[in-house]
Image (cartoon, rainbow, N blue to C red; front, side, top):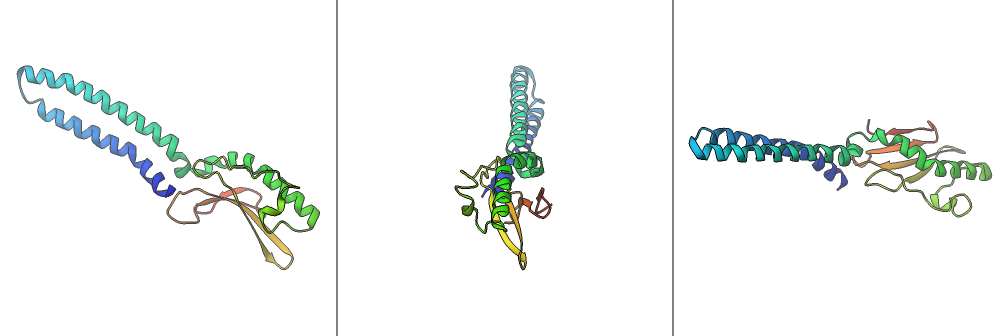
Length: 171
């Protein structure tokens, strides 16, 4: 659902632009009339143009605020690095103490982590933890935040214990 909301919010500026252009075209065709009515139409036309430009500006601001996480999720990597640092530290401390990372995030509580931090990523405040045995005795773990960029379920930002950095799974 967030993916569809992200897609819809990105259409708002284009819809505002089309509405503004239609209004301006309507005014131009009405300007062909003469006299007092023409003067009245010009007055209303200026108001309508001002309104259309204000609507367009508002839509573009909305695009930047609400669509940025969907369109350019990699801009949020510095935030994710900061907010996920306690999780990374807790998993590494657990691994030193037990010789392997926890199989589930719940194993970190309460000794290594008092609360699971929010991601800081808009519309998806949860960071998921995954751990698997990549080869006998060797474990790989990752943190994941679903971004909702596309309709695919794997549109996410991922921190891997192998690369030790955040990256996107779909770009």
